[in-house]
Image (cartoon, chains in turn cyan, blue):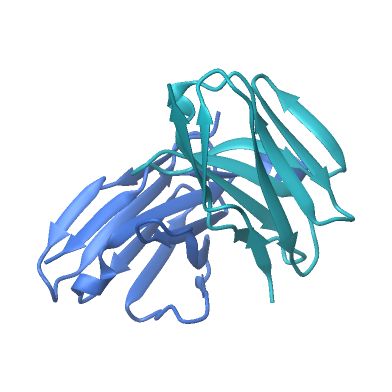
Length: 109
Length: 118
C-alpha cells in the first residue's frame, strides 16, 4: 500500500529552527509537495521537490532524497504565525496526490 | 497567482436535505478539479476527481449517488451532498489543477466549506 509518515505534533520556540520529516512509500514518484494549513483553513502551497537536494525559499527550505524516500521541511527564524499543520504530499505514478496526516507545529514564545 | 473560490464558506442544514457547494477557478481554466473531505485532526481525504465534460472519478468507498459532482465548465465544479446526515458533517475542500503550472502540476485550494448537519 501507499504510505506517508510524518510526526503528529512538534513544539518549537519562537526564533528557533525546526525540521519536519516526511518518509514515503508510494507506487512511483512524480514529485513531493509541502503545504501549510492553519486551523479551519485550506492548505496553502509551500514547496515542491522532484529532484534530490535542497530547495530554499526564504525562511522555508525543503529537502528530498528519492533513494531514501525521505523529505524534510526546515523552518528558520520561527514566528508565532508559523503555528499550523504542515502536510507532506507525494504525487504517485498515476499523478495522484497521496497525503500525509500532517504535523501540527506549536510555536511557544 | 491562481485563485480558487468556494461557496458557501459554511452551511448548517437539517438531516435529509441536500447541500450544493460550488468551486470556481477565478483566473485560470481548470480541466481537473478535486474534492476533498477533512475530519477534525485528520488529513485530507480525496473524494473524487472532477474532469470538465466527463463523469467524475470517485475514490473507493465514496458513494457517487450521495456525493454528486458536476464539472460543467472549465471554471466551475459543484459537489452536492444529497440527503445529508450528521456523519456527513465535515470540512469540504476543493482544489484545481492549473495546466499552466507545467511539470509541477500544483493544486490550488479553495478556502473550504464547513458543513454541519443537524
